[in-house]
Length: 113
Length: 115
Image (cartoon, rainbow over all chains, first blue to last red; front, side, top):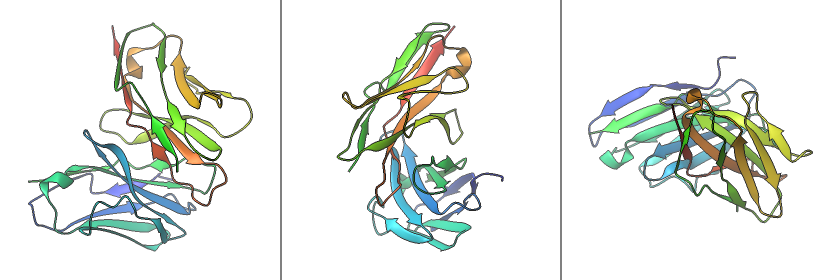
């Protein structure tokens, strides 16, 4: 397996624009996580899905953020409208269930100017 | 709910010296514990994990960590570090047997190995 695949690797956008980040989890994994990493706040869990169903979205910062998982092999994280303070590295991770470690993608570095 | 504390944001050390990166956790249930490593501009990679059994776990590159339930700690150690060990290290916890399997991470410790 190629691991968790995220796209794009880098995104630069203007304030107010919509941004969509994409993730393909490892085949067979039933849990998917979206994390955000910044210098100030470290690694924050935004939302996670189990069997394509959102289980815990308490980490989603505000209504501008939304995440979907239409099927077991694809998830998106959308920011609309984007703001400069959303600039961060966004990681997607997946795992095969309880008691197993999460496998991370390479991340998407988002810069909002 | 679980939480993780990594008190040291940065640990400078000379090459071939020993190092310990500290991790303490808080949980009302039994837990699984993990150490991840992040090299510059890369994602996180699993270094080692404690699920059950022996409280001392080892990685393939010489790191080890010991689960100490009474002290709620899972400190990471290496007897002799290399320049290539320079990276950020994250401790993480998940609930054992809970309904959720989410990982909660500490704030990370930057290990800076100097020649």
